[in-house]
Image (cartoon, rainbow, N blue to C red; front, side, top):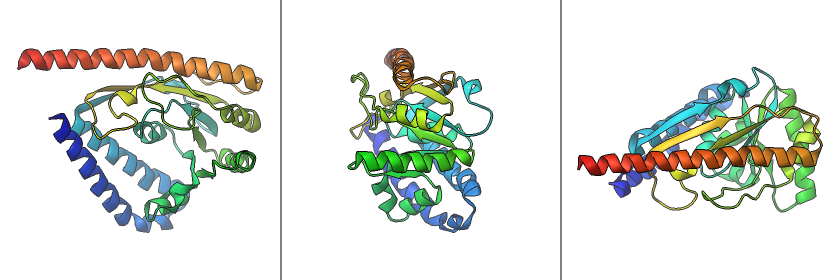
Length: 253
């Protein structure tokens, strides 16, 4: 059953995403704010719904009150899967992700990413990356948007030691805005690698914003401790939920 559910999700999501972005091509003519609200949020909602219904995953969001009511700020999220790239962005009004520039080159999908005015970077040129990223981030913050960043740079398997990059601290110091830490346990249901997806409960926890003004080292240490402590706790909660669900299925059988 696990294999069948995963096969259904992966197949249907691939087809649905392709059709969605083709059908939504006229949306590229919209102003970027309307594009994000209509096209971007609809895509996120569709994919998350497919995952919920085919795999059997429940969602919970804690700490929504910790998101600033308006304006530009940084959102720094734990990165375990593809799930949070949609789910966390869905929670804020006008997200703009920092992402690999190669994604912009993907036909059709990349056109939509470009229209959303995200922040592409070339990971191979560190100094140039920082200058370009900071310049684009300043523009997006001035527009009242939320700069989404994964401090570890890439997805990390559940239980793997954290590998935070100092770039998030440079961005925080450069922009002079609040940073909202986000923890979750999505990797338990949507792992970094592998075909299989697993039922369970994914919990996102939004922690109180870190106010601007800390020095880079203090901010970097606080951010990592905040995200990792909460993520470890949520992973244990998620594992316990999966164990209970498995036990109930076994008893029912």
